[in-house]
Length: 170
Image (tube, rainbow, N blue to C red; front, side, top):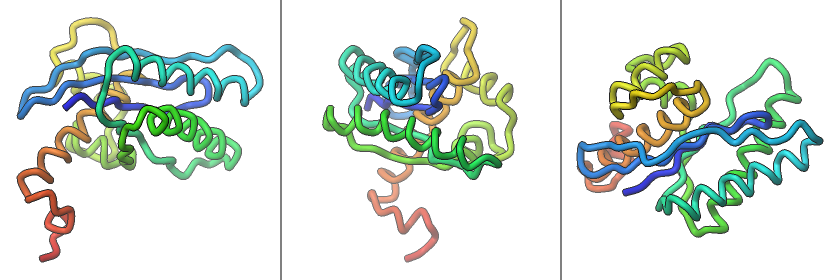
């Protein structure tokens, strides 16, 4: 399964595509979409086009994206939500299913702590995916979302694709 992970942001959106074959994970491509310093609607358009381009080039079969966390600033949370919407629209237009994960759940899945620092996420993504080149925090977060989805999807497969089993309910 080829997964597109997205770490949304109105100024910088991280993206990563990971191939998951059983327990083997491999990064196919990662980077950032950095819209020009313009008004928000134009930046959102650039995020949409950038994600659509990644989908066309790397052909993922699913999008995994972080949910909006509660920010101190309501305006920031709103902009983050709009950046998420641009990425989600690009994915749904391409026919991809969308899976959402809380930032704490992503960190827990890849580092073992929901309170992990960005540098820890970067380190673990380099280790898990055997990446030797420099890795920005935004690209590492996108890789982490994709890896989190790969682990979750695999676990659901072992549990008979019944999410309630994962929640501890019969």
